[in-house]
Image (cartoon, rainbow, N blue to C red; front, side, top):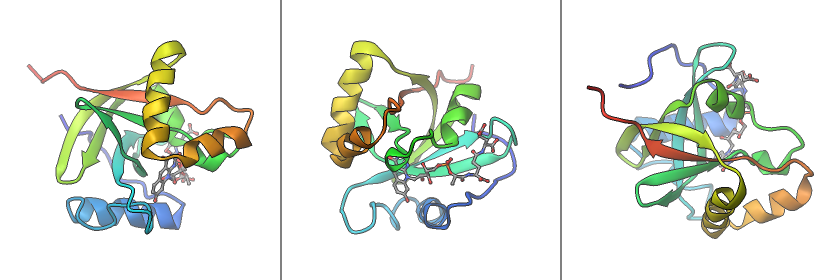
Length: 150
Ligand code: F42
């Protein structure tokens, strides 16, 4: 069941532009992080405070139909704001290319987090540098396909 609500564009112009171009083109345009050739996805979350739909471009980290999203924000001291949305409303949508499905997000810890952190760094090596930049433990969520409505 797609998330319902009013879209609230990001205040980050470059990220907003990428999320909107990706979604409008079915993942054909704006599909990589700048000219790195590394693929992105678009995550739709429900605002923890605003209740608005938030669309966030993130690096694509996929394994066996599940995805990880990494709240790195370039190694900034604070979590990105979408982090709080996932905690408040774990039901999210993820668009990967043309495919757009519902998932349930779960924040990881321990060995499970290490397993997905390794996959994330393999997909996007700068994550390791970001973790060096901050004492904040960069959160990793796994997104598992939401149960079919029934
Ligand atoms: N960011 C990452 O953290 N990890 C990535 O892997 C990543 C990859 C990536 C690839 C391409 C690209 O274009 C951007 C990429 N980014 C990546 C950046 C990402 O898209 C976000 O811009 C960044 O993570 C910051 O997220 P943010 O949610 O902090 O965005 C800010 C700029 C923002 O949009 N703020 C909004 C505003 O109006 O100020 C509100 C956002 C929001 O969700 N607010 C909540 C609400 O209720 O609406 C409240 C949340 C709360 O604090 O409770």
